[in-house]
Image 1 (cartoon, rainbow over the protein chains, first blue to last red):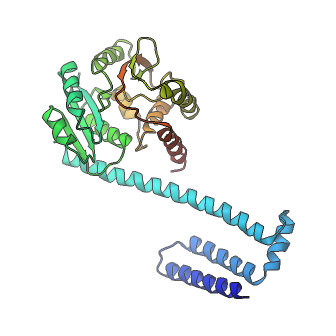
Image 2: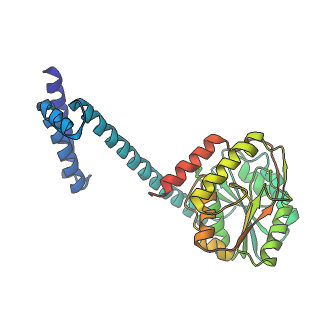
Image 3: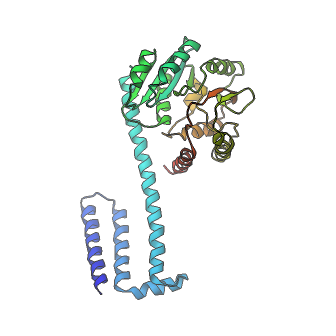
Length: 108
Length: 223
């Protein structure tokens, strides 16, 4: 099917980006392995949609696409939370730099 | 007694001169330290002209961040007592003297301003704040800090050097208030609430601000 071809091309592209970033050491080994596993599972679900139905039924979810939707939603929420935490840490680091500079310059 | 009055200010040029002047009249011996939090107006010049020393945040970091900067500078300069005061001309400078006397007389570590204890004078307080926002904030504050206060969020507090050294402010925005209150308990500091005078000229923090404080407090648990 056409949609399967598009998805597989996208997954190959995503995997190549993971490998390139891992080679450049922009992401940690553990993180890159996590992403490789994620995209391989996504590829398996695209090539063998029946597999997701089997898994969905085992877990008590009706359709395979529903299972993918639920898992994706949970993952997205978790990633969003991680980004919020990282952003807050970044904000606090910016404050430290701004404070150090203000104290170093001293009062007017 | 080496007293530092720390006033965080962001675009407060309309009121900062009067606030600094009032603090100077009430406490002539105190060092008045305005922490300009990246203002884009003439807050720095106005505060300086009124006789304050002014530390400058190059970019806006929030009230908690500015208070932490001012407190750090006060401690470095040997402050015995540190006062946190608002720049919007809603607080009464004469309360600083009363709070400092109370601090010494009762051998306390911290005095917190309250709009809701007997003797407080609150002028033009919006009904939404009095009857809805503050009661809800009080419950939320209790949940996060484990401390029961009559006023969940008041910009007036007086700390001894010991208290300021034991309290760490890492919340950059408005959640610093609950953060400080929580540490009163964990650091076993002696504190009390004192009635203060507050004159409202504008609404100030609303429901949206409260929601943001809760978000910041929750997020702060994971940072």
